[in-house]
Every structure is written in structure tokens, then in C-alpha cells.
Image (tube, rainbow, N blue to C red; front, side, top):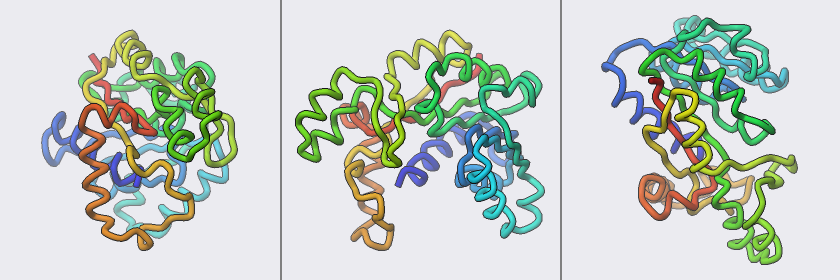
Length: 240
């Protein structure tokens, strides 16, 4: 659900900003298993993925290994820390920079974000996917955990589905940060408005009328007031 919704939103922003058919230079910081990186490479773009977790990087390599040669040639995988992009890349090296599901594990994200903006070319797109700090009480409240919901209203930290301690971000704060680093917010979406309480083991084939569910989530993620209470926020900044 998350990957499909983010892909639709990202494609919308790319189409709006760049000429059709242009081969873009894409950096995916914290690429995980490589879902978005591989999808963009299949679309003809040159993709560099940075991942600090050796196990996740190996998963991405395995996924890449079964792709056709032409796609494999368009992907470069780097083991490294996304907070040190200045060590690996020159300023203005990329047209699109993705940082999805990373900020929640960074205590102070400002330096990371400034580094991402630095490697972004003028007019380039910065795509962030973060936990929504304005909606931390939603999952607990919808699950009937009233004590947890009350505590979450004033919290910035939470325990994620993997049992890890993580941090949420508020849209207002990130909007100010993006302006400060020269990549002001251009568009934003909500991700997982109605499905955040779905069990982790739920598979696409187990969901009746999946297309309609995706349509509802897609619409909600673009519509006020629903997008403001989504589990995740997808923020898109544009480099000055």
C-alpha cells in the first residue's frame, strides 16, 4: 500500500517538473529493499542507492540481479551513511533525491536534509516520507488503546511495527526546515489514512476490492482534512 501510493505521488511530481522522456539522475538515500529505486530504473532513469544496513543492501542487490541487463546497468548501489552524502557526491549531482522512511531513525535530521539539498540540482525534486507527528494518537485510538492515545498527543517518539523506537516529524516543522535549506515545500500528501491499523501480515491477495481501496487511499492522501491525519507524510520540496 505504502509503496504504491508513494509511487503514484512521486510520478505525479516528476511528470510535472521534468520533460517527458528525460533520463533523470536519481539518488535514493536509505533505499531499503530497493522498491522505488528499481521502479525508477525500469522507467529509464539512472539511479544511485545508498544504504547503511548490509542486510538490506544485499536484499536490494538480489532484487537487482534478476533484472534485465539494461536495468542493472542503470543502478549503482553504495554502502554508506545517508548523513555523509558530501563524501560520496558532488553538489548538484542529482535531479531527484529520495529519502523515504529514514528521518524517523535520525535524532537530528537537519544536517541530513541539508546534505540532501546540497546534492540536488537547481529545480530538482526532494522527496521525503516521514512518520506524521500530528497523527501519532490515531493508530492507538482506532485500536482502542485509550491510554496510549492520550500519551501520544504530546509525544514525538513512538515504537514502530518492528519494535524499534523511532521519531515522528510535524509538517509545520519540516516545512520551515525545507525553506531554510533552499528546497521549499512544493506539494505534500498523506499516506495510509484508512489502512494504518491493518495487520502486518496482510497480503494484497487477501484484500477484497483492492483497486477501490487504493483509489480511496489515493484520494484521501490528496484531500483535506484526511491527509493531515495520515500515518505517513510524503513531502516534496523543490531546490531553489
